[in-house]
Length: 495
Image (tube, rainbow, N blue to C red; front, side, top):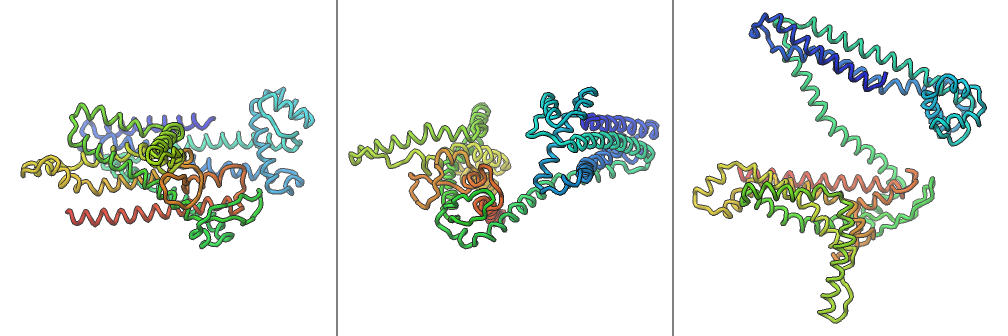
């Protein structure tokens, strides 16, 4: 039985259990709901929870453990010459066994018999004709192992189905027996919901911890090969890729050019996005009519739905050449030399286009925050004789400032993590310079470059990507903590 059908059966049992539980509670109440501790729906929900939750927990554990057990059994049954091979070869052979097993499931009895009796070359042909292409001829033990794998998988599927369905039915029966007039069904259901909410809220934390640990472990390996001071204080980025499998540390891994480019391009982007986005949010929240707001806000938010690669093409084909040509004309008028002082790929190009992309983030978030300011503050300010602009400047914006700071911080994080626009609009040149008219690059671009291609995670040239990632994470975390400190300090003064 497929997993989807099994899930459907368990859910169906849960639905039926809910109806039966609610009906039993109603019959016990005798039409007088006040005689029960909880409403009918809570009793039905409790029976449904008893039928579904334990079955799902067992199913999740089974799906995570059973494949490992089957794989171990199949590997242990392989002939000694197959078990004595290198680990990489054993993994490759097991992958071939799994491919053969999937192909054998679709074969009829006659074709399966021919496959078992065929020589390796014929077996490869038969499997290829049935949609299982193999890189080489399968050994006889692979066919036997694939048949054993299918047999154990079938037994595992039947056992899992029987156990899960039986557990679901048993849970429903136990829930029905526990229903009584004074049974606290609501409390039990709320405890389950609380546990589910805690689990969901923990997922983000656990995911963050997992990401940090995975990056940190590889970063430690990088710093074992390259001194930390050369990375954090180096001013030259020249990794010089080594051959696969090599641990050559040749090259220079200076962080400063990448960090400077990241902060420079992000600052230019925020310089364009913040004034336009914030002023548009103020206008839509305080000055625009409801009809105009209903039209302009969705149109503005369309910019947020455009893929970043489209912005990159826009910068590469339109904005960059436009700035280059305009600068050439300005230079010609001023000096007579029509040499462009703005390159097509530059910090200004990337920052301008990225700022356009960030406008809806600033505008939409700030608009929601400004709109959430209590109406009584506006009315009180206007009632004291302040103009609308004075109310906005002295009352609305101070009250909304903590939220606006958070919105700007989220926008800055989005700018720091942008890659495609930087690649196409600012280039990949890692260098230290302070002219907005020259190309630079960012940390995220180099992370992509270092992890692109068929690489092994053994050389510093590849492991440096994890060091870049953990460094960027720490910088963002510090900015978040500092912004939170500023927001709390201002909020105390305002309150």
